[in-house]
Image (cartoon, rainbow, N blue to C red; front, side, top):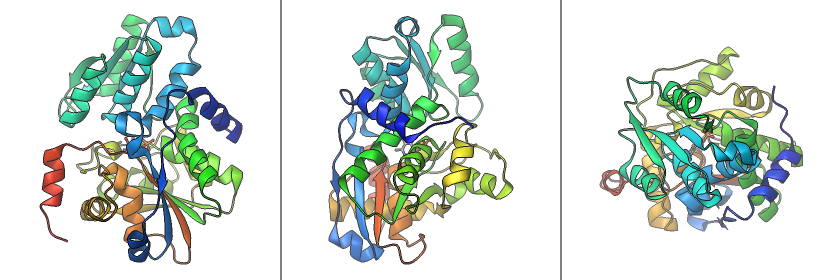
Length: 321
Ligand SMILES: *Cc1c(COP(=O)(O)O)cnc(C)c1O
């Protein structure tokens, strides 16, 4: 198991301080009433690039040697990681190549291109993005920046929780969106090191339940590419680095439906005036729909991102409820 400690998360926070925003923490009486708990949202939808992914990407690129940086970076991603790598690469004057699904949300494709990265599109259902990324890396000498399964990424993602816990004390629980497990692993290392009695829950879509299956089976299980609206949570298998961390520290993995995510997006937008993308709303959806055990009075929720196509948002908001 990769040894990642609270000290690594603290070092990451210092390393990336000049690149990332310290995002706001907010709360809403109406959400609290609906959820039956005092909730504190960490607004990573306000992060640069619109998601927490900038934290891991910044920590990764800043941990590389100057010599490695001179040969560039390559990555594969559903979008937010790509955007984060592109932003950090431009800031550090590093060449970036991004392997992206041809059907990624248009806002994410366009934003990534606008940051000056080279984009290589691929077919999400029939091609292996990792294999394409590795081939480009071996041909060009560029370093592959994985979206979640690396100690530098995990430590960087943990800085969001470090900031949240710096801002709000006495949290009984945290609810965190769960895709490949980088955000949850970093959260677990930060939160459990500071206070082992804080409960930490990962939240994934019912239709993308690779973590729930893997934890039950006690091994990493791969599922077919899930068709969930939460494009940031479409990973098919827990990571080799993230699985042992989550397995040993997480309190539970909670499942939410597509409709619960949509309802939560509408609630956050109409009542709190906060725009979350489907993946970004997963933690809030679990709390709002009371999937956490009873009796947890103060709950931290990471709104992990806010990048959503306007036509997708219109489809979600056109519904009732
Ligand atoms: C990537 C992403 C996630 C999932 O993070 P992992 O580290 O892969 O578990 C959740 N929400 C958003 C908005 C993301 O971009």
